[in-house]
Image 1: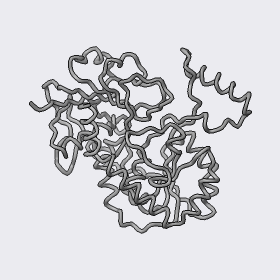
Image 2: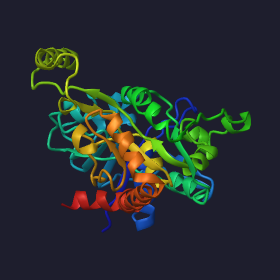
Image 3: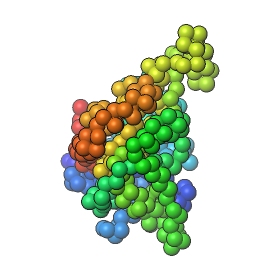
Image 4: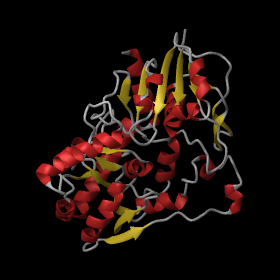
Length: 360
């Protein structure tokens, strides 16, 4: 008898409170491609092409229940209704450090899939690294303009300035500006007819969908894809993170002064849509070195092969590497990064990884 998969999702409310559950969207799209049946607690994610919801409400219980962490945000009492005789999976893409992955209330879940996975944290054995990855919407939207003329420029399109983004704007951008055009992209507000439509991609993605953005990222030789905040990992003490982090910083300052080496830092909240949109497009992503800063994904990219990495906060060395690569070298990395992302993080690849994980 086939395994019954059931998703538990938070409902869409408004573009400002869209409950954009992209990890589940990619997984369900992969299930569809692989012919795996599933249903959900609600109808969610309208697809204009098929004229139906990707997730359809079904009453039957699941053998495998997949919970979005957002499902419990407005409905904490629902945690008492989880059936632990079934296989229960929690998708935790929450920001910051102390999320369900470190919350004892979720310790009975069979698996917690943690985006922004940080190996310096003391996770239980049920916590596994996951990633934002690629939805069909991202792949198809980027695919519509892959033939756009590539311009000799660096694109910057952050919606929010995380600390590492501020640092790269301060240290890296002036160096790149000596050899490249710097292109700042900001989405314009769409017409009212779009914002009023709760089934539009702009509304459902929480105001993140912009067709012009995908054209411009395909037209840019490089894209700054940084995300997250550098922090000094906490000591294994039963103290609040703010206290532990401060204690360790003060301890290291005794030896290093204000310039604490990068080896003592890790990144939190590093995953982003910009990163995966960069991987899937013509552009070449530039972001922090994964191996150095604790960026942990189920399948890891290689620095210098799939993306251009910044090590040791040495933005000058990265700028020099970019100049030495030349346009053809940058294009080669971009192409290899796109192939890598589609191979390992397309919906079908993610769904296969999910099923294989549960079967091992």
